[in-house]
Structures are given as C-alpha cells and as structure tokens.
Length: 213
Image 1 (cartoon, rainbow, N blue to C red):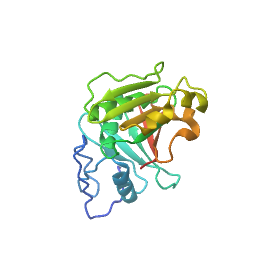
Image 2 (cartoon, helix red, strand yellow):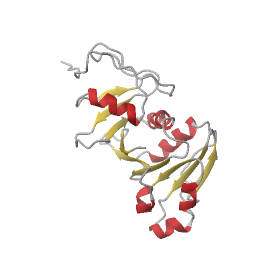
Image 3 (cartoon, helix red, strand yellow):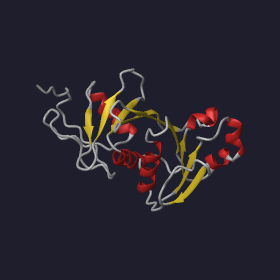
Image 4 (spheres, one colour):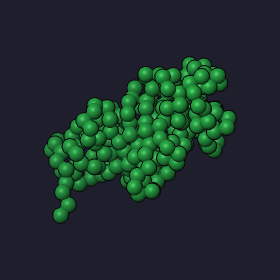
C-alpha cells in the first residue's frame, strides 16, 4: 500500500515563471506548485517531513529529497537524466543574481557540465557548451555573460591565480566553476555551492545544494 507523506492541509502554492510548470498532485489531495529555488525548496521541505517528493512533470521529473543530516541549508534533488539536470539548472538560475559564483563539486561524469548547459539555455545562449578542460575558461553572452571555468587540470591554488581567476570573479556575469575544490579558499564565501553524485542507478544523479546566496 502506498503511503502518502503528511503535509499541512492548507495548500502550498508557490508561483514561478521558471521552466518548471507543475509539480506533483495527490499529496493531501492538493496540487503543489513550486519554483525550484533554494528558498522555496526550504519552505517545501519544512512541510514534507522525510518524504521524497517528485518535482516536475511531462518531459522531466526530478525528486526533492530532504537531507537526513539535519544541517540547515542542505537538501538535494535527484535527476534521472541529463535533460532533467539541465532543467533543474534552468529553474534554479533565475533565482540567482546576475553576478553569482556557482561552485560545482563532484567526480567526473557526475553532471556538472550538464548543469552548466542548463544555465546557458536559461540565459538564451545558443552556442554549444562543453567543458573548457584545456582552455580553462569559456565565455558566453546571453541575457548576461556566463563564464564557464573548468579547473580539472589545475593542481594548486597558485595555478588558479596564475590564469586570472580572481579577475574573473570580479567580472559582471555568472561564474560557473567545475572542480571548484581545486581553487580551495579562493572560492568566495558567498558562492552557491552544489555537489553532484552518481547514484547506484547509473542514470541518476544527486544534486545537493550545500550553500546558497
């Protein structure tokens, strides 16, 4: 028998102009609509107890999963495909400032580049987005500039400084940084930090929001 999570009887309606249009129905017989932003997810998770709640409909459905560690500010999304990962990025990015620093952590193939591709799509960038592994930085112009920084081949903070990392942080536009752990303390404390994890099901990725603006 399916067990439905306990949610307040008063319907939760969070409106969004994002890519996300509908969320799941059937929870306490109320349709829930949510913008996939950290602030709104916190409000949803506060009411959703320990249940996993499907997010989205139609072509992509992610799952909001409350973290069990009890740490405030931590929650995760389960993506079931690269398309979903891009959709999550597109839904989140409109809530971030136009000069946000987004630090991406996770192993090779965990979805970091797909996430940046979703940011680019949401910003109206039509160019193909690939990891600038050898170039280190790719620059794109859309609604606002996007600086895609890949530190995979960087081995120390000194090397990070050598290519002008701090100057990029000061530029107007969104800075998305793959392999952000290579930059150490050079990542600003105000950065939005996301970790990516390959799940036991190889098609799934856990995207954990570690910190937010």
